[in-house]
Image (tube, rainbow, N blue to C red):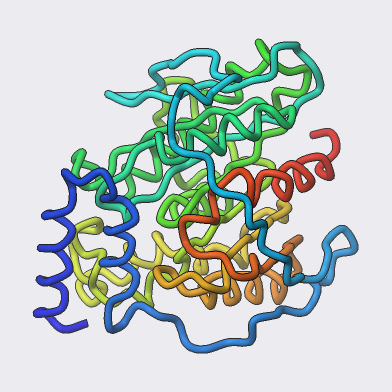
Length: 323
């Protein structure tokens, strides 16, 4: 990416931080730059080698409208808890205690902005489908976050969920992390690099989640040029090792074989579907348990809408079994 393109993108990002639609607008500025799109790949990926996975499938779009982001709709909201330095998460859970899976949801916003409200409808929708959900905020760049601190935040949210979930479920150790967009990229690092992040959490050193769900994530950050230089504090050329640490592809070869579900709309104009295609292919090559589904006719913001992905994620969770 040219210096001029980077400067223009950053000006757009900063100008939009006070807008109500900032997260999606920021994603557009971040991901659809001149060097952002991954190389073209097929829209399907062969089935992973493990017997527990399924082949990537093209699924029909649900024409139902997406629920508005309003706390008035949160019938399963329990309470808000602090879990780190200036950080909070919302807990959504079924009314009764049962053998429910535990989910940590992580919002997008282009690394620069965003907050957990964008994942609120999905968090509550998953709770209505019998999951205990911890919907977390982390330090974005506008909140003073940098790498690896923002990944540490997310790892600590996972640890908080592990230590708190027994109040709501009889299976508190079965934890899945679900990230959307930039949150999917950051969450994938927590999933595939256990022990690398979150070692100084208030709740104790973080453990790897038991499964990962990525929603429209831009995973291979090497294809974003220098756009994330503010997050790393250096360019890729100045510190390639640091940038590699922040790229989930660097960890796949040594990652635990945890189940992964990747969902991505084929009409996504912000984070091209090739990002998920390439991650699915890399996981398959490494012999990992991965399922990749195409959301036919769906765009970027559809990928975290409960009416589009809620049942798919709930089905994935139900297939995980006991920890």
